[in-house]
Length: 272
Ligand SMILES: [Zn+2]
Ligand SMILES: [Zn+2]
Image 1 (spheres, rainbow, N blue to C red):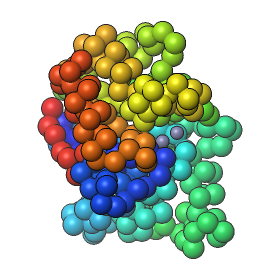
Image 2: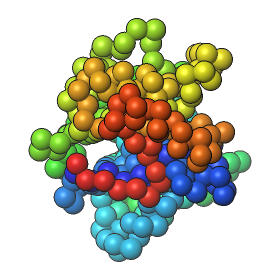
Image 3: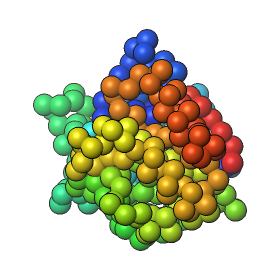
């Protein structure tokens, strides 16, 4: 199983000299298991992934991808109108999302591309788009992988995904606000995973002023990683105000408490 980051930032894309190392694009992670392609979230990093996919079978309209949206906040969907494979006839795109605030993923993406917001409508994207509504507790087979869903504490809701293939597993828990006590259900969901990708938007000090905003800290991430016996923890969904030197420091602090912690970097690929 290979994992590659195309966007690690939360809330807003922040390109520039201060974000070169960890990246400025918003949430997008590619997971590949043999020929099976799974994409977690469609932030601005999805544009970069799309361009890369266009070097292969997606260019000829013979590609297939499973795109899972944790939720429909804009930093998780605003890359979709710029996803080049969606404009090529023949490509199969399976779009998985839950019903947030009474709007389906289909409706939300259509709204994002109404004529006020964007010049090309969703219906004008010529690939084969298939929307699949997903729910907390659901388990889906996607060719060679199995994806499980778990509802996270986040304003208007968010889903965590556990992707499993063979004996390998990765848990993606972005856009999550930790609870006052250890979230035992999330610990169970992440149990023995090879990798946990976790919302590290705030420092513990920042969090004191941002309670209820729907995000967490590296400190809470490593509590869950330790309790769940996760092998490796990746910090993710960085605050747009945190530059590269700041994230370097966060990573070092986290590594003192849980050595196998790394700050996810845009363009970084690992195999587990
Ligand atoms: Zn977000
Ligand atoms: Zn969110």
